[in-house]
Picture 1 (tube, rainbow, N blue to C red):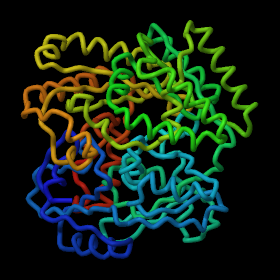
Picture 2: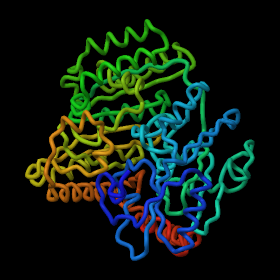
Picture 3: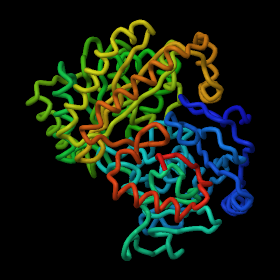
Picture 4: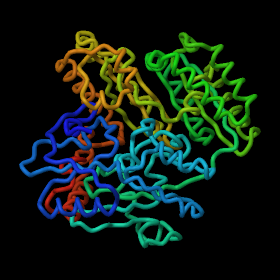
Length: 500
């Protein structure tokens, strides 16, 4: 990676770091970071860089800044699997973890974000994240059992199951610090190692897809399925996002995906049947499907999975939904971590989301607030050629994630070029810089956050985009500020992130 890649993420740009260092292992990281801290440098850790909230993008600072590229910390320790967890270095990607656990007949309870091909475990835990496994188990924080964190004074703090260096240690022995350090974006320290809960691979799995005319019915269906804990994963698309997904891939991608469907089906006959169904559905299988819901279920046997899907179908039917081809969840289950070409629109447009986490009784109001905001910006959106689409997901049994996405024509950043596959770079148009549209998208995102604020919205990947500190009451603000001062009295660890 060239130094030019470290002063921006997919949306925010800041000051270039004075130096970039890439420690070879945990011990090297402790030594190098410790030296920088003692010399008074500002220290920022970076994982896979798959961020769009300014989490590792620092504003101008008069002090020298060192960015720690954590990706060479790649040890996976399988010796604790019998206890129900795996210990990994912060630079391990979710794809690497998946590949290491699969031969053991296991997987991480939280399996990683969709960007897991490049996103690191340390980055996702520092940001907190959702996707694989979240429909049943919630966010990454809920299956993080322990941390090893390098503090600003150069010492190493161990929490949870790692707190005494004993593989058999229980996480809870009085108060536990683990959750306090998840989602801190590196403000309280640099993650070195993480202990994650693991579980056996499912014996059986299947999926179903549905369509609703109204988004409210989609949200009600997702919430009802989540409360009954029927699905390991649920995801919903509005019509535009479904169209974007199908236009984004190529026919060569189709062939590779079908081969993965066959390998992951559990039996040749079932795999061939799935391939036949996907092929017959073709690329136009969604048609005018409207708001679509894609439900993935797992169990100890096919009868259990069948029972869960029968309950899902009844819930959908009672809400007026109709079943459609389940191509999307089949493909998602076969290829959990795909190349990250989705960081652009299908015609090379820049992409940026904004998301909110809602209690289930506030999700419908959240979607209405988003639509009202779009209506208020209708003229500006049309003038700048901005389009939008929305993803919905269940995070555990009590939270709905809503993620509007915006697309517009603009120049690519070096990080886009570094992330996209070569075949995509060759075929997409290169657009000129468009700061006017970019600024308008920034205003839209801010307006949506403000519209959601009265609904008690929460956010993952807080970074410098979401108003964490400003959303706290006076007592909470005082506590977090005092914690930051205690752990980092000279404000050297990613200062300003979280608003702290």
